[in-house]
Image (cartoon, rainbow, N blue to C red; front, side, top):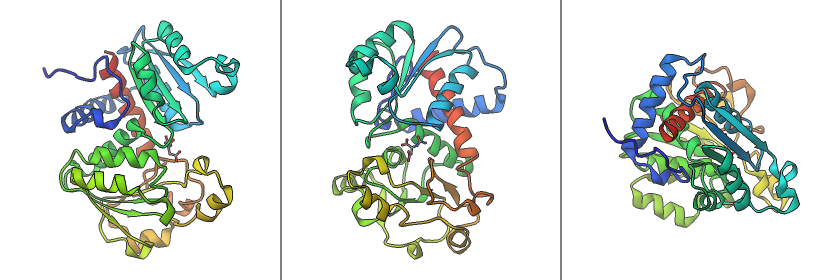
Length: 312
Ligand code: NCD
């Protein structure tokens, strides 16, 4: 059997993985999905995972939580520790992590400051999973997004997609582009307000990695028959000027008319969620729309696979 290199390790950036590891996570997720785990699988029996969420979360928190529980493990849950933990009294994140290490077998952390998950990984002697660090990365989201595309098209080579919205601040975008760069011949069309484009540095970096990035200027420029459209919200919490946010937030809206005009028969309509108006609810019942269904549910299976591989 091949060595499981995730075992006992942190997951801070998708860059710690490679094509083979990603495919082995998908294989594990497939197996778990087939068992349809109504009952806990006992894989994490006796293990405790601490969930420390310093930023709001619905899916990432709940799916990690349910992933642990469906695998037979238990959780310590701190949502909003800025108000409910000793951080209020001035405790440092390093001290909090050292304490959680005494109680648990792994820590899943979300934090508003990019780089914090890395600091925690240096501090802790147990695995740290980055559940989103500011505008940095969101590696588990990229894994579930890639798994959703892989499940549909049976490959991640030669994938053509569209990414729309806040490409500058969206950590899901950053991790997804990095993840896709492990596979061959991707072409990704990018559509965002001018001030929310990927930075020049990132554009150059991704080109160097072999992804072809093509910036387009409006919805009419979307080419036909893409494998996926990945819509994102403008990240309000990253704006110091809220008027600027208001001006930009609905720059590009995914409507039924747009889907009818521009999507292919098999184009996956994706969004990491939450959406705040940029996808009209009239799109929700389209069979190609997976953001409220398959994509979100795959988050649970992929996180089960990941936690199994890190903790077994
Ligand atoms: C994303 C995040 O937190 O980065 N949400 C998520 O985890 N599914 C996207 C977002 O908040 O816009």
